[in-house]
Length: 134
Image (cartoon, rainbow, N blue to C red; front, top):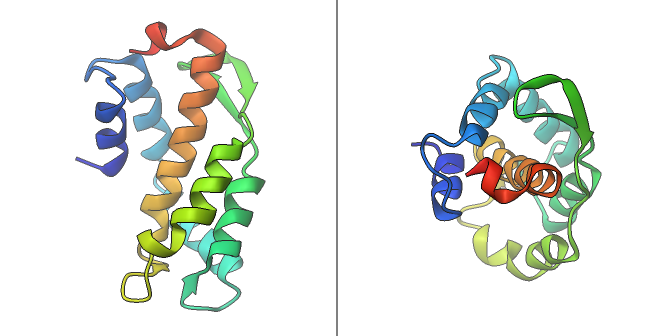
């Protein structure tokens, strides 16, 4: 299973949850991995790994809209990061990505997906409620 599936499992979302289909569609785009690696290249400025500041920049700059559970007519803006999101990055980044396991180009797409997933889930919970998603 992908790490985003584990994240939804930990939050108690059923395997049949409508949000899983929504996320699968979002993350199954053929060019997504390539786009995320291109984003890494832009954020890293040619460095082999992202530092805490670059990752905070990524997290704080995510913008976009999401369809409400595959309803192509209804789009809502993603919620901004929470204070807790930024605090977690400030306090935990160095422990999660030590020099021997940096946030490099290969690791970035999976981590970026988790950040995007958290933002999408928070947005959809705010809009439709957690019970509708589970």
